[in-house]
Image (tube, rainbow, N blue to C red; front, top):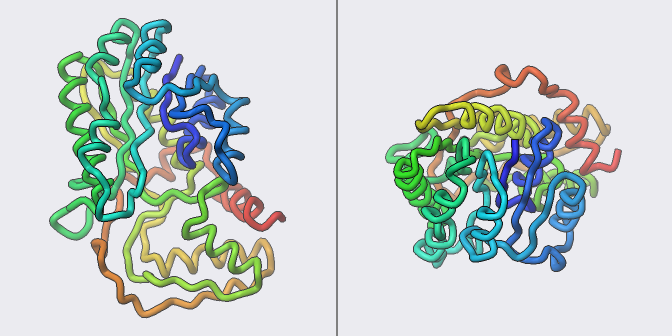
Length: 308
């Protein structure tokens, strides 16, 4: 299929595009900027994307250049993965501005490609309001999560008006190669230096998932949405549901057996409970993706961060 995919230079976006391309789809990826100011891990992803898809610079979602793109070429599926993330952890995150950016000119976009459009796939987050399962009420973790949840309602409204099938793919906590320096990257970097890795929030119950497993689930989900008649569906892919302390121990075991590193952990007595204690996704996907090899996924993860 011909896929229009936003947000391709992000960690999960890169993996989704990579897996969709491997499945034989033709992917066009509009960018917010030119891509020439990327550095570090994002530049690595951007350089790899050049071989996987057609990159369109300076065409942020809903802009005049984006509208021209959708009017000039037919697309089978619109995958809206991009979202406003500036200061996304800050209590001053601008929810209204993010919502406007994430849904800009959506009605006009759908009208422009309605003739060829088989479906829309919107990326959501388990940290939105009313997603996954865990501590009630299922509030948004942040202004960023709130903006994502509101964007879902806007997409539901406009896709229903245009009678376009809509799917929501809800991301939990993905990890894997080419990720920004977050939790598992911190563990690997610390162990590689021969030090014990600290875990400050070991009591949070979360849902960590290999990004390549999640990308395979995304590809299957896209096929499902594109094959629907006008309706709405959702997938909340789930991986390892356990506390962050237990997940850190899982990573330590996998890394230790492949590298011989001690992989020591220091689990702190958790004092920060600013986020809900429990929030996880609801749809286990390991058994539903038969071509995923868990051992090879861990091999690739360890190899990427260890150089082995």
